[in-house]
Structure formats: structure tokens, C-alpha cells
Image 1 (tube, rainbow, N blue to C red):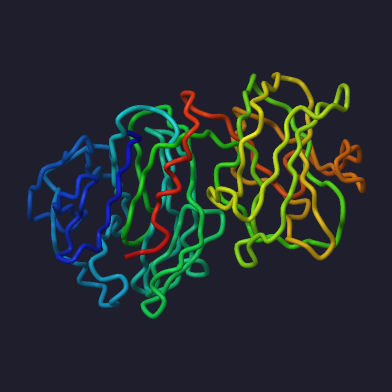
Image 2 (spheres, helix red, strand yellow):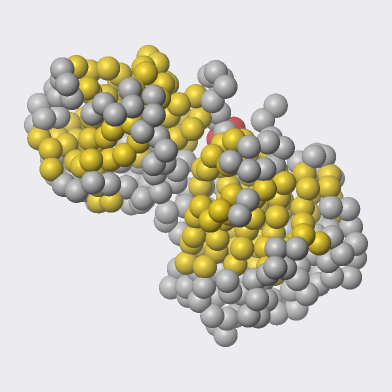
Amino acid sequence: MPFEAKINFRETAGHVTDDTGEAFCLGSDYLSIDAYPVSRAGLTFGHEDSGGIYTTTRQGSDLASPYNADPNTAGSVRYNSGNFFDSFRLELPHAGVFAIRIIAARPDLAFTDGYFRLYDGETLVYSVPTTLANHTVGYVTDLMGREVHHATASAAGGFNGSVYVHDFASTTMRLVATTDDYLSYVEVIEQAYRPFIKVGPPDANRNDFGGDVGYRFTPARDITVTHLGRPTDAAAGMSQNHNIMVWRDSDLSQVASCTVTPASTLLNGHYIEPCTPVKLTAGTAYRVSSSEFVGGDKWINDYAVADYDTSMLSITGRCYTITQGSFPSVGGGVPGGGYVHQNLYETIGGSSDPSPLLNMVRQHG
């Protein structure tokens, strides 16, 4: 079974429930009155001070924050205080690819702007600004996606944000804040696929062109691609079928393809389907494109592709053709940028099962 850790800091009594359904308490830096176990069902939790010292004496508290009276954030646990940094630490069962969802809360205007940071062991891998502009007082916020989404007490559900998918080299995940925020929900789930683009897509903004559009890329290592994905617009969704094709530059040949539909698997903001597995060779130039339609589903303009895995591929620029189903010969743009932002996936461990990311909860409860 894939590893799943679902930690809700808003259980009825202010407790936490682990992946076996067993409730226990988990403390913050200033609520340190109870010494509860630090390990349950293979999950190990800990608090660290700014010196990186892993402590258990500050484990445990079923007290809600005294600073927070908002009904939608009551019971959240503060994980940073003052001018020093604290972190929440989760020990993973092994290295590998995991999806992370973080929901946090900001209770007071007096708290300063800062960053929420995800570490793979001692290595910073993702940083999200928690400014008042994108982390509103009295709201709980879906942090790990490229688009930050909020929910209020009157609309507590409906998070449409994406998660962050990372290939952990270590077995320690650290969550660090540089300002005062409250950890409300953490979910970490082992993945069946390794995606090239590690977060969900930004909102799309074009549907004024008919043809095939995409980007040019070069694998950094040999990669066997088993699935292809097209991002969907977070607001409008996807209502049409789209062919996704991978092309080799040297002979203009199509080496992989699939058709995604509104009924396809929706994985972190991308509709995905399997393709005939194909090995892409390191250092060889390829292109990926998808069929797009005037007035149809929106797609992403020639923007930088954020948060992609440089150990898999490098992006060399955009590409397109006005003739659907043909090699997208027109290039341009700048390295790191492209149209649509299609995703490529390699299967981990030979599994063909849908990614357990699909089980991730879509709203705060």
C-alpha cells in the first residue's frame, strides 16, 4: 500500500488523527504542556527549534490558539512565533515521490509577511510567500499550488489549488515558516507517477488559435514516458477532447500520443491518459504539442513553466503549427517557456495504478 499521512489539526477536540484513525495531540512552539507520543503507525512527528535540534519535550497540546477566534481556523496549531524559526517535521518511510498538500491560516493583521518553506532534509525545495496579498486574515489557505486559493468561514470548502509533488532524496520533510501562521492541515501521499511539472497549472488565458501548440524540450537523462497530460483552466475546466503528441526533432517523427477528454483522470490540474511507453533519450531534442481550437478550451500562453523537474528535462522554448496532427515546426520564445504546459509522466516501480494523489481531499474539514 502507498504511504499516506493525513494530519488534520482541526479535529473535534483539537486533536490530530493519523493514517490509522488514531487521535493524538501535537503541540506548537508555545503550547508545550503535554508530552504525547511522537510516533504512530509508522509516522514520526517532531518539533525543531531554529538550531535544527529535534525535540520531543514540546510535543502535544490540545489547546486551540488563543489568538484565533475565527470559527474557520479555530483549532489550528501555530507553528512559528516571533523572530525565530520553528518547523514541523515528518519522517517518511523511504525516499521517493510524494505529493504534499498544506493548508494554513493567518489570524491577525499585525503579523508580518514572510515565507512558507518546504525542505527535503536540509535542502530547500519550495518556497511560498505568505504575504497579506495572498494569505488573507481570517482565511485558511491552500499553500502548495502555483495558484494560492482561500476559503472563508462562510465558504469553507472548494479548494481548487494544486499540490506540490517532490522526489525526496532524504526521508525527512520539514515545513518552516518565517512569519506567524497556523498549520491547519497536512497531507503527504506517495505517488505512482513522477511528473515533469511538479505543481498544478496557473489559470489559462488563450483560445484564439487553432492548431497544435506546445514547447520544445531536451531530456536530462533517459526517461520512459508512460502518460501525458494537458492542464485545465481552474475556472472554466475542460470540455473538449485534445490530442497530445510527442515529436522527435531529428526525423520529425511522432513517438508518443494520447487523447485526453473531460472523462480522463484529473491529476493535480492535468487531464492525463496513458500513452504507449516510449524511451526518450538524454540530450535528444523533442517537442510536445496538443490540439487546440479557436473559441475552445483555454490554454496557457508563452509563459515560463514554473516548478518543473530539471533532473528530467530542460525546456528550450515554444512551438506550434497551424496544421493539427503535424510536426509543430515553428519555434521561438526563450528557454524555460512554452505554450499550454503539457505534462509528461514516468511510472514509478512499474505500477500502472492511478496515482494515490487522486485520493487527496479537496476541501478543509
